[in-house]
Length: 215
Image (cartoon, rainbow, N blue to C red; front, top):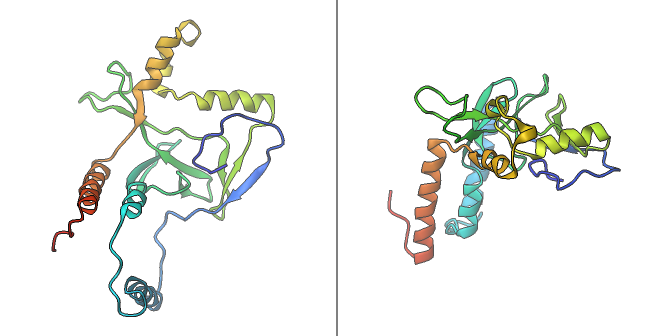
């Protein structure tokens, strides 16, 4: 099960699995290492034979759209902004087991977490079955015990934590529950919106066969 995927249903016989993850910390590379990396990047870009780098295509655009700036929020409130990654989670503090999850926002106009200026309430949607080892590797496991399956059911239903405190879940109609769920949407940073807009323009140029604008 990919780390950023939601399991469709809990089942027995799961166990844990170690997942590699990039550390979200600044690597202190030496000047020599940077020189080697720069040379390799130039060689790759030029095809190692003096040829120009190949033109970007639709696949490149699709890949870049998946890696736009993303706000990650930890359960303790800590926040980091990093490009989205294949795991869909940021390791904020591996030693302390702190993970950051992509931010969601509640668009309920009456959300008690909404700020005075109208800014929507932002919150993480942490997966209780994903953890991190001190070395930074992620561990994903399946819920096996009945108590764990109950936790899974609660996780699988997206809810705004601020709204949930005031809701009467036992007496809500299916329509009301769906409305609260629909109010919860992924949060998009302004920089991410700008990145996607620029990528869309680039995609239009590629589709039209136009050359990229000169810099």
